[in-house]
Amino acid sequence: MKAMIFAAGRGERMRPLTDTCPKPLLKVRGRPLITWHVLNLVRAGITEIVINHAHLGHMIEEELGDGSKYGARIVYSREETALETAGGIANALHLLGDQPFVAVSGDIYCPYFDFEQVKDVLAEKDALGNPYPPDQRDACWLYLTPNPWHNPQGDFALTMYSVANEGTPKWNFANIGVYRPEMFAHIKPGERARLGNLMRDYADRGLAGGEVYMGEWVNVGTIAQLEELNAPLAKKVIA
Image (cartoon, rainbow, N blue to C red; front, side):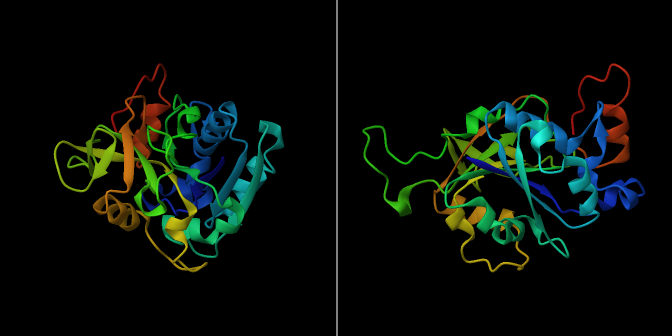
């Protein structure tokens, strides 16, 4: 399995820090946010990683290089202007291949997320061993968290392992998911497109699976959050 890390965002809410440093390179507890993901992916045996970037992307390449110092093989998908999440994936499909891949936002902090669990979530066969028809198998698998302060209404409901747009309670999308490449085949390389719209479409069709992740997870969106995470003896930020 390959992985994609989203790193093309401008990080407007983190200015002025992000005027001179791409948001995924901001450090939490001694490491850049993006490095936490690289290390955790490699620990799970996912060593082929695609990273998209736009704003100050050369700094990300200088920091991570080809990934060999982490035991990874990193390639980059360069965008002149950020293409949003789905657009970024579509632009990088030639690097991701034709098998399901995991994607994670480079600006979240989840140091204990075990990427080993993502490898077999998109089942090809039912419990009896019969292959699912292509139009009846989950197209994506989404990881959800309890709702943070900035998203109190949540994004998706969850019944067993089926993600839905309607229902209660609703959970927050953690910006971690596994996707089949065919989800993005209709998006032209270089076209801007948001992943949220696609996920909701597949949820409406009953083709989105998921589960709740209860470990430490922070969407680092403000300088105050960054400072709190880096405070001495910092334990957890609900964000």
